[in-house]
Length: 102
Image 1: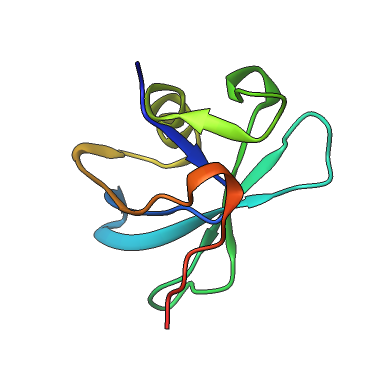
Image 2: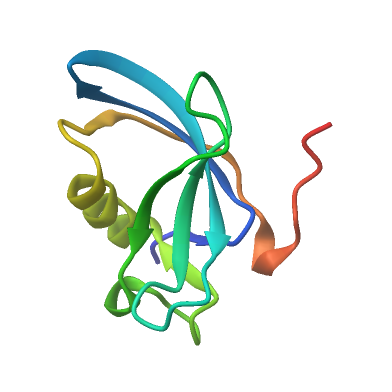
């Protein structure tokens, strides 16, 4: 079965928009029905900004998780030149438990 990622999970990956960038993002809840999750940058110059949204059709388990394969679809949709080989799950917040990042 495909790994499920929940709100609070942290991922790191590379993409290229003018220059190659590697940043970390947290999967967070969003109030919009069409986009139940947002991807918030938590590292580097863009920390605190929204990097993208996850469409509801790619969300699992009653809108509480996204599979890794569906996350890849969303990263390709949201980020120019997303580098699949660089994707790392830094912290998987199991069933919505918020990870301790201190």
